[in-house]
Length: 281
Image 1 (cartoon, rainbow, N blue to C red):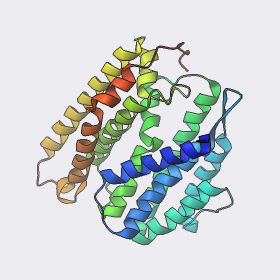
Image 2: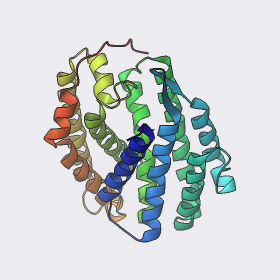
Image 3: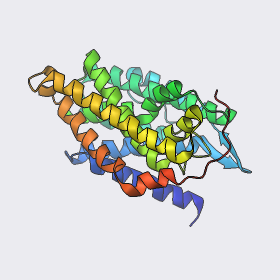
């Protein structure tokens, strides 16, 4: 199977896996979900290419899409002259805005801009061949792409936008939990990019791979406990619970927990051989 075919198959499997986590609403919303996942994986796939055993990063593509996202509120759909990722995004945005109140469009567009800006940071680090500091990585990782995914899915479920600081704190915990769970079983595939909590942590903590994976599992448990503490303090009559925010987050935390406790994926992260450690950025 050609690399392009393998990449497409992997992308479709990711889309199927992600959409299976989510409750099915109606066809229009399901299509919007799949378009979002397709857009993200297309951008990710078009932005990094391996040429003569070196990673070539098309940062301009991500910057241009970020600019289109920034303009999306005013024009409703970005220009589609950037190639297939932008065309997919234009289709997605048109579908999403038809399903959500206009007052939520600026929030969603801002989240997409953060995602694209974070991807630029990611690819510049890859292009430089260095590893981000751990705290910087954690902030960037949240928007590649989990925080944006949370905003899209909330919009599709009709869960209102909130400016609550507690909501933002919960979203950050959930985003970390989902992103780091993914990092546990994708570390081997991402070892060349080195944009993965297991890999970044291994260098920051100066630990062998198996111990770094163990530490990531411990960090996941800390995030889960902090999430449980915060939602427990809110109580079942809180605004965030009544509006559907907490039940939505609960669903995703539960799904990610089932994944990271899979012995197969956890073992895969621990079995990556140690490689040369790159200097921190």
